[in-house]
Each structure stands twice: as structure tokens, then as C-alpha cells.
Image 1 (spheres, rainbow, N blue to C red):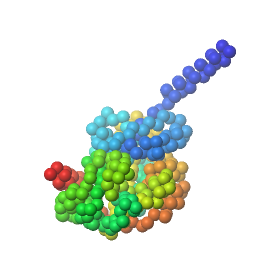
Image 2: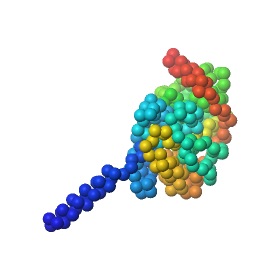
Image 3: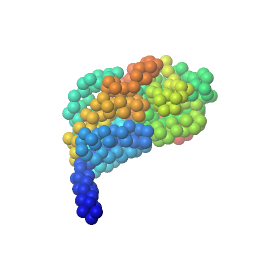
Image 4: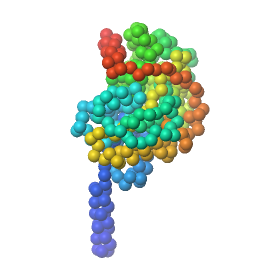
Length: 327
């Protein structure tokens, strides 16, 4: 018995030592990605089997908040990988000079546009849309302009200073309204219940009945169908068209594990990882080989023509939005 006990202790010590000597890869992301129903828990085990490393996700309220933290930390950031900004925030991230080239091929991707970026790797995408419960909203808005003008509809959306989804609405409103965007924000503010920091907070408030519509994605109804067998949630289809968000990941220049980080970015596009991401993040896969066929049953949401604004223009749009809400 003593020898058996001694052998067990020795084996435990070797196991602890092996874990201690594993390389650690730290990924900054947003909180819904790391939630118990999000993709991170399943991706963690799958990737660790491939890399023989320790994958650690560090969550933040939303993608813009996460990027701002990396920007604040600069060369002292603990992040090896940033996962969760999008094509609308990419220019700011590129300009920051904090991220390294991924050195991967941009081939075989099922995206609505050709992907050629050498720094940021896409892992899912989806159209921004306002979600409503058809049992509670009998006459949903058919356009963004109708949503803005309908004072009978209570609306919740996300702060464009902290949220990628909120930033999407900032771009959506300014693309549709142009020079009249300030008036649009004023009209929308009259029936906006709250502006939340991130998606999880705002979608949760909507599900509690605090609003008629919430800004989310055209894919969001699939969550309710898959997990709740509820067919009542619908993404409003707007006649002006919808902006398409492409979520991306990137390697920080200060990463102590650049090759491991590159392996992780490549892993995100593997069919099995894509199946996990698309199902648990409820977003369209960039590689649809093993994706749930339900994605193909979604209505067609027309893509709104969009030109990426300069950083200075984005600052002016944010200032206008903030000024309206502060009144």
C-alpha cells in the first residue's frame, strides 16, 4: 500500500510538473464568447489537444472595450491574441501598430467579400439587425428610417464607444442618413429605453421585456430555435439593406508565443472549430463545411453599400451621437 501510494504521489507530481511547463496562450475576447453557452469552453479543450498548451481566454464586456484595453496596455499587454473586433474597427486596430501579420493564406472562405487582409483573420460573420418577438410586435418596422421615427416602439442598442455592435449602428445610421444623422439620433433617443455597454447586457434586458426591439444580428433567432425551440423571435428586414459584420482575430506584436498564436488563428478556421463557433456564437461560419444547415434557411438580408470612413470621421460621428444623448 505504501509503495502504491508513493507511486501515485510521484505520478501526480510529474503531471503537475508537465502542466506547469506547458506554454500558455492568452486570448483577449468578449464575455459572450467565453460564457458557459459560448464557443470558448469547447474550443479550449479542442485546441489544447492539438497544441499541448494551456489556452486561457480573458473576457471583456465587448470587442471595442477589449481593443481599448490592449491599446491602453500597449507593449505591456498580456494578450497573445485579440479575438472579437470586426471589419469596422479593423482600420483603427491596424493604425495602432499593435498587431503582427498572420502569415496565413486567405483561401477557401465563405464570405460575402474577398478577404485579403494580412493582419486580421476572420472567424464568423453576420448582418446587423433589430430583433423582435412577433407575438408582441404585430407591425414591425420595415426600414431603419421607420424604426427611428416610430415613437411607439421601445428600442435598446449598444454604446458605439464600447461595443462593436453599437459601432455598427453608428455606421448604419450615418450611411443611411448622411448629413441628417444628428436628427435621426434625436428621434431615436426619444424612444430608446437604454444604451448598454455590451451585447450580453442589452440582449438580456430585451428578453426580460424591457424593449420591443434590440440591436443584434440576423442570425439571433437561430439561438431561440436551437436552444429554446421558440420560433417567435425574428430579425426585422430593412429595405435600405443591412451592414455585414465580419469578426476577426489577430496576433499582438508583443506575444511571447507568436507561433502558437498563429496556430490558434489557423485553428479558428478548421471545420470542427467553425462548427463550434457558428453554433455557439450563433453567427455565420467563414468555412461552412460542417455548419448547421439552418443557416441556409434564414431570409435574405440585402447588403447595404458601405464605404469605410476615416478615423477622424468616426470621431465626429461619435461626438455627434454623444452630444445628442447628453442633452
